[in-house]
Length: 83
Image 1 (cartoon, rainbow, N blue to C red):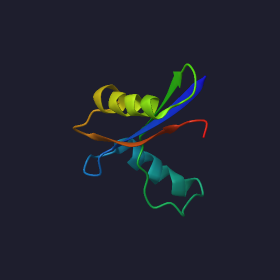
Image 2 (cartoon, rainbow, N blue to C red):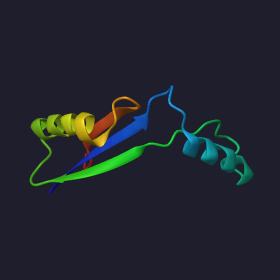
Image 3 (cartoon, rainbow, N blue to C red):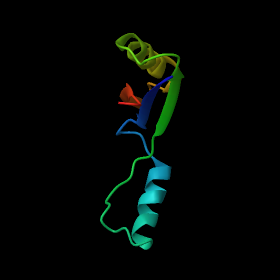
C-alpha cells in the first residue's frame, strides 16, 4: 500500500489567527526562538500499490480541486509519504 502526503497552507496574505495564537503561546512556554507560526493542513492519501508519477499527478489535481480552497490556500507539497 502506498501513501501520498499533501500539505496545504494559507496564502501569505491571508490572516492566520490560529498561527498567531500559537506564536503568542510559544514564548510563554519557553520557546522564544520562533518568531512566527503559520498553521496549515496535512492530508495522507492511501493508494493500492506503489506511488507512481501518475498517482502523484492525480493527488496534485485532487489537492487543487478538492483538498484546498485555491482562493485562500496554496498546495505547497505533494510527495510520496514513504520515500
